[in-house]
Image (cartoon, rainbow, N blue to C red; front, side, top):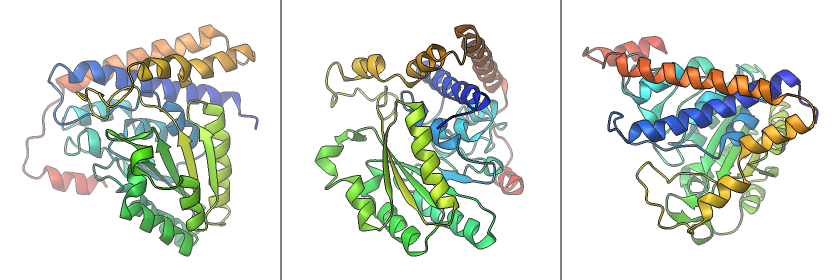
Amino acid sequence: MQIARETLLRSYRAMRTIRMFEERLHVEFATGEIPGFVHLYCGEEASAVGVCANLTDNDTIASTHRGHGHCIAKGVEVAGMMAEIYGRSTGVCRGKGGSMHIADLACGMLGANGIVGGGPPLICGAALSHKTLRDGGVAVAFYGDGASNEGTTLESLNLASVWQLPAVFVVEDNGYGEATGASFACAGTQKARAAGFGMPYIECDGSDYFAVHEAAGEAIAHARAGKGPVMLHVHLQRWYGHFEGDAMTYRAPNEVAEARRDHDCLRLFRERVTQAGLFEDSVLDEVDAAVTDEIEAAVLQAKDDPLPQSADLLADVYVRY
């Protein structure tokens, strides 16, 4: 599949933005200024970006507690996200959602979700709306291997198949449901589960943007054509713990170091496009510098923004959406 140069540059910027956004949160969370929990997406950037590069503004997605990457890939504004994570009134949800509950319906982002397996049912509703309105939209649920065992997810797979909804179920399989290995907790295979609900199954390497882009393109085209739902199984590795502060004693001593060395989607992307002569390193360096400035400005602004104060803040959120 040939990908337009503009799409490649936009995708690189999105992946770099996710990486730097998360790396900065890793530092900032340690200061104690960020309330609540933070779950980082580092190492998984190619999945969110490779999928969302195939989506339009009309399409919808639902995410997980590890949702920053999906938000950025779908176009949610970085400054508003940072303010939301800091719990500020200028956040995309006016400081009411925090890290695990960022949403921006204007971008088709139905929300990160603290409920394991909470996204797939939302996507069934969104996909039914797209089908009923005949607007050509597709709904995408991102969820992990742990959430694949939840009844809500299995019921959603069944419903989407029965109603032949324009939905794509993206299993972001990093091998762990919190601290439990997938081999210990998941009976059978994701492919068998897809077959059990009568839907096509596609598998790809989540460290390879091009593999994800192609697989997602095939899945989304299938759903958009009215042929029903698809399961996309993306194999990837997260670089940090399930949450910030997780000691990761359940992982092998060199596991994360090897993932950073061998499965860095940003490094692999850069090597491929520069070796192919599509971009000079200097062009990508300029993107890196611009993203660095954007993240720095977002952090400084978030720290300076006011906390929510008024009793009618919730009404303000309803008015926005």
